[in-house]
Length: 295
Image 1 (tube, helix red, strand yellow):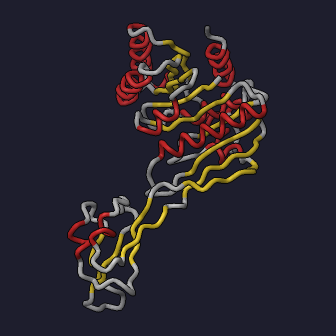
Image 2 (tube, helix red, strand yellow; image 1 turned 30 degrees about the vertical axis):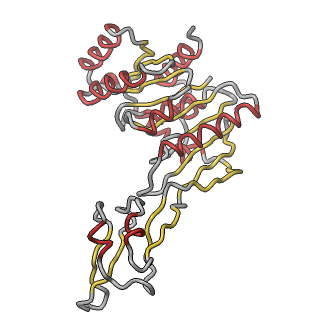
Image 3 (spheres, helix red, strand yellow; image 1 turned 90 degrees about the vertical axis):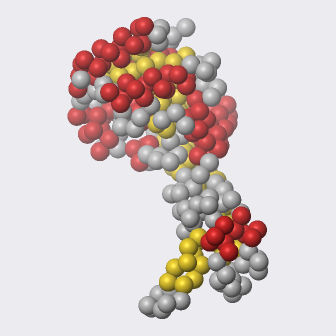
């Protein structure tokens, strides 16, 4: 059973809930698919036994021994990634320079260069890791700053998680997805059995929840809505519950705001590990039972 935990916006507490779910099972595969900002490895400190280089695309680089500084590439670049910059030392001489962050890897500059001074090099700073942690196995990806194709890296993470679950005969896989409704979210939820949408009682939370529900309705997964920190704005929490009722969306439950969750994160533990007898831990356990035993 694959359970994906997602949210329409960041800051809802999605990863805290994913961590809690992962520590309610004795054996679980945990896949952190929020590859742009992976953080569950900070909590669980897995012992990695596998590392895979992820090629996210290509960037342009200049061979200055060949470059004649003609500036043709500057004129053709649609992303303003190639500039004429003054050299160090206060000289008036300007040299063609490529901004790696802005470069889209379209290859046009390498094609128009009259002296073939520009070549494309692989973006090889991103990684996928897998290993073990205290409750089973963990897989996660880390996309380097400025690199792209996060959805493809998510697919690699999920394929590795599935391989591990089949090899070790582990029934439950918890997927911590990224926020939003973009490509990486679609990669995270495609083919899963259950989707848990974590929201918060704010206007933006409700708005983004509706967008997320519209997305997940297109999949053959069972979708649930969970309100985190519901008591910070009970009025909007009631609106969310009413929205779920009117649209026949499964309502998993609601969690109150509790500082013990923050204390658990600071201690590099899930709230289930840190305070198993707390009210929020008991409610998460109840929600987990509700979700995993739904038919």
